[in-house]
Image 1 (cartoon, rainbow, N blue to C red):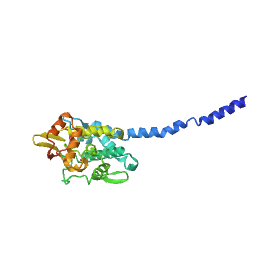
Image 2 (cartoon, rainbow, N blue to C red):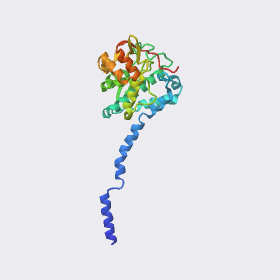
Image 3 (cartoon, helix red, strand yellow):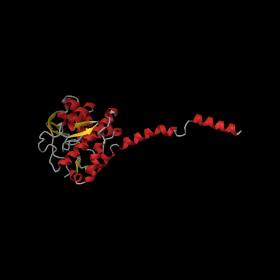
Image 4 (cartoon, helix red, strand yellow):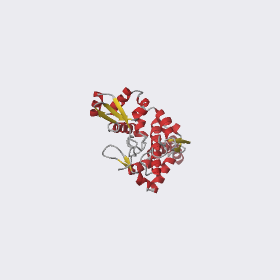
Length: 265
């Protein structure tokens, strides 16, 4: 009888398979999810501490406070360094946009902190801006901010990337108070587009037509390739009142941009 019971138990164990099999199979997926959630956590922590959300709709950055905090500057360096060997080819489009945008913004903040106090990212010898000079190791290459924007992000064919990156300037779309994440990217970019377009530095309505940000001139190609396509883009994200005003006179009269540093006041 004991032999029959032992045999039955043995057969049952074989059919059931190793008791830890399900846990072993699920473990990589769980670890991947945890890594994805925490990948930009350090950057979010810094943003929440140093980005000041103002009532006028323009986010400012407390560069002086960050400059004076050695531990947080070290944390910023560590966050940027974690992408030195990232295989970006293995990422989804959303992951690429989120990660490259976060890197661009983090490297820009680090540059400003290094130059602070300064009145503009274009101050000093870089009259046209330092974007080709500022480089970081990412994805196994030494890449400039200029190339991140023009050779990587713009080639991902989403005009909303212009609301994802911040050039440390008053007229630039806001540096968001938390890192971009692939899982919530669409919602974050739509909100960033809406926040910018519905702010006077994005669109200002006058009796003679619209005064819009220079980004719609510099990157007209990305917004559809014509002024009428730019208008369509603006209308898409404008609130009801602004949409009605734009449609009443859908004419771009002037482009404008203020390169003053987006420093706290």
